[in-house]
Image 1 (cartoon, rainbow, N blue to C red):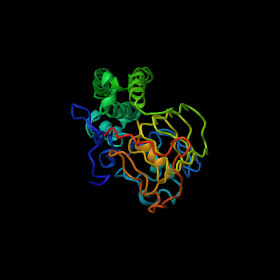
Image 2 (spheres, rainbow, N blue to C red; image 1 turned 90 degrees about the vertical axis):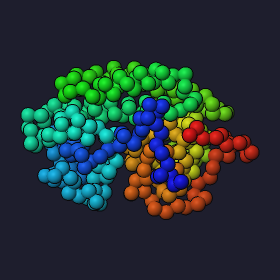
Image 3 (tube, rainbow, N blue to C red; image 1 turned 30 degrees about the vertical axis):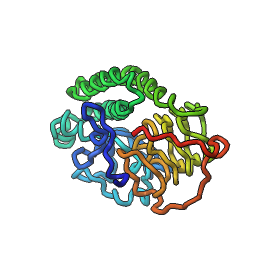
Image 4 (cartoon, rainbow, N blue to C red; image 1 turned 135 degrees about the horizontal axis):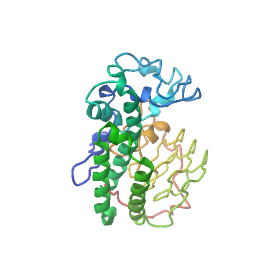
Length: 307
């Protein structure tokens, strides 16, 4: 079975990460309107929050979608809403768009921001519930997942009233505990660089199995050939990180947003729920990066995958 054809992780109740992927055809171009961005290497122009991008067409499709990178908008190819766009458009607002109903504009835009946060948490919670090693906190994770789903199912007024920071803080305690339970099973010394500045760092020979890389700055880091099995990557900034030949198939809390922001090739292994970005290098260069040596002694058995 190919990597792309493998089933995405699901919790015992049948929830799948595939349900938390963007469906732009059923959205109202919210990611092209709600966020603000400044002219930079990621965006060719300045845009205020709530101002439609000039490339957004009447049918809510991007007029330069196939040429975004060539036209100076690589930041658009990185963004991922975790399915919040279609949820707001088709469920919260019943399929009525902000152009058709201008009175919904402010509530829809504010609701989209909250919904994206909630759907991101749903992604993490659903993933953690698929880890056997995290079974001691499965009941708490499931309660948190149910509560988050109820918040996301609220009407527009209830949605914008959600205290996202407080809810995220409570959920994060559980996610961290689940991560600790999984990483505790990784043999040897586990690297802890939570929140560290590793911009441009050469990590090719560093043992990153079970590493704590939450919120770590990995911008432009060289991770070619790295094994990130059971490494916690929640919130890690992977912009421009070189993942060619790296194995992230067993990484914890990796998202499409992070993958899109990095560089990779056909040799990069991803979790089943994530897809290979079309802008990645279509070739593979065998032997381009050494595997860990001193940190991974010869003869040490590779730990079986969790999934």
